Length: 137
Image (cartoon, rainbow, N blue to C red; front, side, top):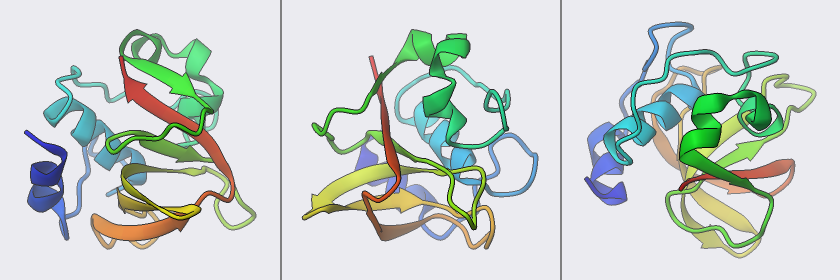
């Protein structure tokens, strides 16, 4: 499956990979990792807060993530990287999205928002608050 095929398959759909808390941003990332990247099912929570930001911040405590992904802050993003943002005053859990392309100082991403439960969509997201990314080894 290509990245484009994954986006076509899930665009507009609610992805609830683990069956907990509805369609969250991490659910879409886990579905992507399993279906597109061939990484085995992983339904454990993120490490400390249960939030998306922990995929980056608690990487060293997460054996599956360490086995299958490199974590980086480098600015050498490529399509398919799962970008991870820190918490904000309105969202204590952070956010993840699948990078589709660069757009100046922003990204075109495939994401879903657990707050709105609107399903997966293509959006533009700024680099503000970006912690880094996970990329399949």
